[in-house]
Image 1 (cartoon, rainbow, N blue to C red):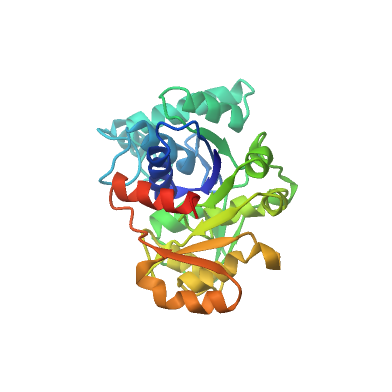
Image 2: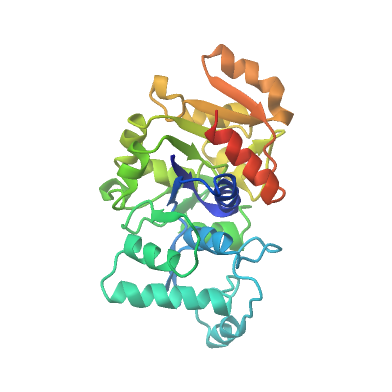
Length: 314
């Protein structure tokens, strides 16, 4: 069985861990196409937060309490950078995490692409999953706020905690980007493609915006989406602020319609909603949706595996 997941952030990392556990012992092939819109240059090094979060989670070296970065982290280098007035004082890089960024930056200077680097990073630990960036082009997410000012997504998200009302999310240069090598093939050759319960706007959104990826999804065997909304609330983070900015209600129904059915030119065949939102399912079913109801909380690996198993056996 071949499974391809479109993912980003902590929700994506938890789902992919669960998927690997659900398929353990089988001959399944798992490929994860990861959002790179969160990427940035900081203090001369290249950061890829979503790729690293998924890599660390699969390797079992992630900080489960904070939800990001490495376990057992120290922050001496960040403290020294602040003394020099370098970087962002509100954006802390752990020392172990910084080692990843330095390795990545060095490989970039040697001429490697982001997809080649993802392969190198994934080979350090036996993660059992192929990691692919959505594109090898740098298409960092910019946020346009109410006064028309622009800032990197990480500044809006981490420094301002998404409290500045946003008017738009943009990825300059993405119209000229192409899917990273292997991405289109991973989508079209998969037995099932899963849209992880990641932020629909800034995690899944940039992936779907890369030219060629929506076209690949149109040729996929089956596309299943998992709602990131449970009981009318986001599971983690501030995705509700992102949805509000693009005029989408924070509800399982609204997010489904935002993605759209493949039969209507969208990207989904099946939409999995939480038990807490079971009363919303008939509204989608009346519009022709194949909507299923199940437990979506990924509180531990067992629950994440159960969710993944449900998604791929629909």
